[in-house]
Image (cartoon, rainbow, N blue to C red; front, top):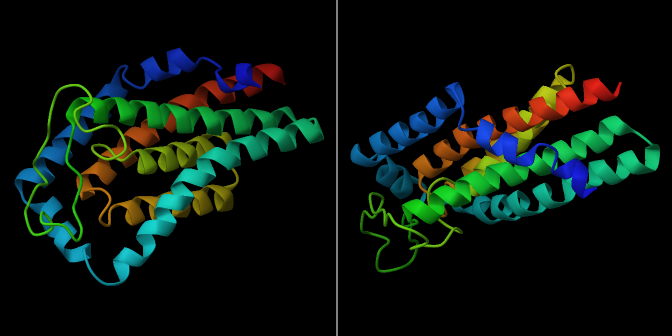
Length: 221
């Protein structure tokens, strides 16, 4: 099982920064910079800091944690029971895509140390959206830039898109799930630019990982 989930793991992590993929990381940085200096991050926070948007924050956070844990294992175990390499491969691909998305964004967080939005504190009326504590592990990896919840969700959605190109309903449903996670954590948990960067980086990670697993599936046929 571990062998399946770790298929070309280090090569796939490296590939997310290779060639044109690196340009997507730069785009995430540029968009973040523009949203910060324009004040858009802060205005979005003020707009969503009260009322109904807050109601989706906790469900999104919970689903964004549980689904990446149980869905890959579920696919893999179902494949074992049915003797289906395709389902096992899907489970392994989803698991690795989630891990790579989490690993890359957590590494960025450890280096950028961005302060997270504050609700119901003495900082809730102070614009701290531009505060980054660059260094190593100055603000941990739970909060900060980019959003790991978002990156993991979009990495899995991108992986399903590659693995099941003809199953549009499945991929559309999971894209809606990923969008819900991103929207939910953008309300008081992350800044808007954290989420947008998570979408970009997670999608790149998912596409890279899924491509390697798709090739693995073709070879096995």
